[in-house]
Image (cartoon, rainbow, N blue to C red):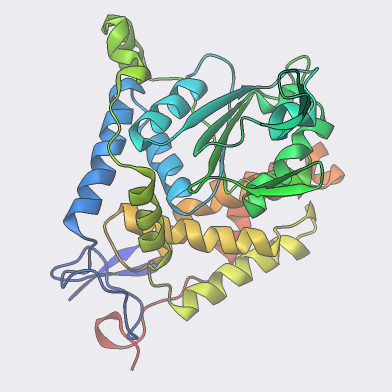
Length: 356
């Protein structure tokens, strides 16, 4: 076992693993090396590789999206038009298999256009229920902030409870159910801010950004069909994805890391620069995202870096900056990073990174 200093922290470097698990209690069954079954890991790598083959130069965004979906969450892609938000979602839907539907949100949409409702069947002479586009495994809510809050709120039940209620009847959504939404910045004309209750139901908010000059040249050189997500072949079926989600949720989290996450979230609730801190749902989502990040990395235990890497995409969009802080140019992400830096990170206890 070697110790390597990184800033003010001491990082444990084991002989066979990249990092030492911060625990001694029992671990979920995987294999003796502490990684997941080879077939599941290969499937995950293949899925991300196929998405990266059409969504060029943004492997970190692709990894973040898969992390959120493995954790059972939903993803909000917020960025300027034309950077590939819709293309990314279409590519993810193709490699996952299952049923995919797209909702193009507009200012005149009604909740029934999303959830479904009763329509008159002339042949049968009666009202019949027509399912809405939410009845699918992967749903793309394209430009979600183009529709008024009344229609946006139709997604609240589906996102949290995986069910929809129409005309007094509650129906379960297909499993797995994943909602990936895109939105343009609020300064664009004809957009509506998402309600706080809905933002809190998105596990992650990701920003794509512009491609590097090299990737943009590569994109221009590539034949059009090479960048067509519809040509991607599915890698798994929905049942396999459900199993991978269960595996990700079984990743071990040490109690010290749970306490660390609660302390950071508690700091957002008492910070003077924030008028709204993170909710208990945010804490739960943060832990699940860290578990999924460890799963993507091939580990069956969470380390502090898993929490740090997922903190901003999971927590920042749920925070509301106070008026005074906003006037001073403070952003939620900056305040969050300062709070995280002020909370001590749990260190391995005892020799070899294990408690005694």
